[in-house]
Length: 164
Image (cartoon, rainbow, N blue to C red):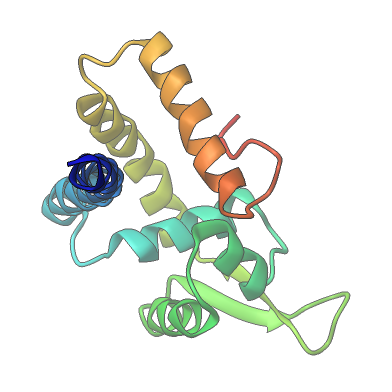
């Protein structure tokens, strides 16, 4: 009888952990789908990742592809494909990096800068909608918990809170 109770407890704990990570993934996918639909309807044929890369270039002149990849949590191959697409669309230009000739510097075209400036209010609206009904106290607790998960997995000990 005791052996069954231990297994049931372990099963319950495993299900709670799995449920947490499932909800975490589902919330990310739900938000990305929601935002992508709104961006596509208002700004045309751009993926969220393309917009994120352009925003990183906009905010961080001189960033290398590797720095951008690390900042938006994409691998080098994905960043290379995204940048190649943005170059073809005429939204990003590559020039020789001033400090490292092996690197290229990424520069936004004027139309890409206008796009990013137009997208920002929609991005804020999307985030506000996703967080509707969630208090600042809830957000602070959630950020603390997620930073603990990151730390438990060997991530940076520094809190990861973009934009702050």
